[in-house]
Picture 1 (cartoon, helix red, strand yellow):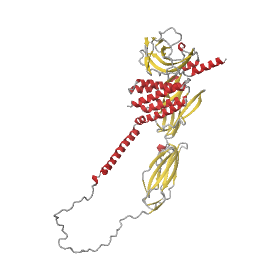
Picture 2 (cartoon, one colour):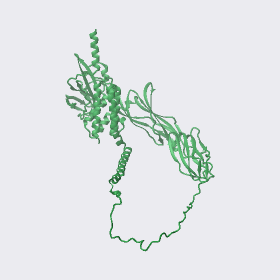
Picture 3 (tube, one colour):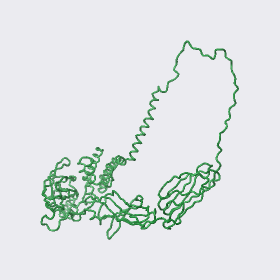
Picture 4 (cartoon, one colour):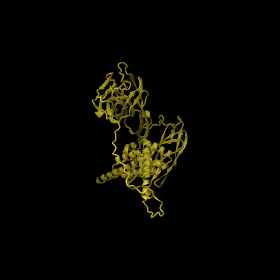
Length: 607
């Protein structure tokens, strides 16, 4: 009994922990079907026996077929006490024309070793000319989602507005909700809400929560904004459009010819996941827009629509005639702040007015206006009047603030001041001189010649100091150009920040590797890879997925082997995050090393 328990324990241990002893690596090429029709698809498998962690090879230019990588799968087996690991890379082949095709052999290298597969033959018949297999041909595997139409119940947008009737310039709160279930959204590249006849504020920070809809539970991401209609009549809001990437996880019927265990676990494991770009479009909304009433419209109305309050302060309040006073007028509340104009000043005959300085903060729009009292008769600042239209009350509201008492004293008298002259000294002739004392005669001998001093230009330190301003101005010019380029060229600025992001991510991943925190490690690897590539290529980081990055690498003329490493890195992250496989430190170390090599290569080949 003890021996049997020990054997079961060892079997369980070796099935879920990768063995340390590697065997000779063998590679096998298989297809799920050797005969199909145009429009059908078949799966191609590259099976590596012997424990290699080789990334997915790129299979390009397969005659007669379009090839797409589906994902990796890993199996462990124990035969007569010997354990081994098998890694299978799966591809989808879609025939482009009818005929008899030979696929392979393929050759590729990894870690100095060269691998060569065998070849397989596939026959593609014209539509309706296939074999006598029962049932209609289909390109879709069980449970696999391939297009936006099939995804509509799993991910979609809903657009809603709190008002279906509003006045011109009245705020219309609008909500866009992204509903997701049984999918993983990897990144949102863009979200737009367009249409004629309105202007839109920026979207606020999205909210995340869960919601039950039609009996299904969805993860919801909510975006909010405000719209303001610019014309009366009916306007169409939307549709809202979103471009995003989703990781579609699916199951697939496993070919038992190369299955090591008859276990449903391996069916799910061989299902894999596929990155898919989606464009989501919501329904449209129709809103009726009313024009502002002309009856009772005050002359001072400047276009503000909403519900507002007015606050007025002044400083200083004790001045001399001709000295400035700053009058601050603050409008707060809810409504269209862009349409708010400066309140009107009434009874300002004794003041000189200047154009106000406008500041627009969150929920408050302030106007700082300089007024200058001309005479001491100005005992109060001008009265302030502000008019707006209140949609809830459906009428114009006038807010008035009385003038603030001020103390104005007369200005100083200005004029020229007489300067007292000092007493004039009487002229004295002094001691009389004899004839010829006021004449300097020519000397026959110049006498001893002495240097009276050293000229400044002859001092070496003087010339050295002259270079300091030149050096300072040159450095300031270079620094200013660099800062201007950082501000104006976001792609350049992001490319400079990319190495810093990479170093921080690698350092954090190394710490998580030492702590053997698998989930946090692969989340950090995935985030670092996306952010680094986004900054390196000047693209949105959330959109950095395997297919997009490979296109960027190809267009930049970089080494094709880099694409293999990148695909392997993305595949490792997807395998760890979405599959139920056991990951050990050897695989984690390999992923980290792979990421380091990717970053090192891209830093050495900057363009």
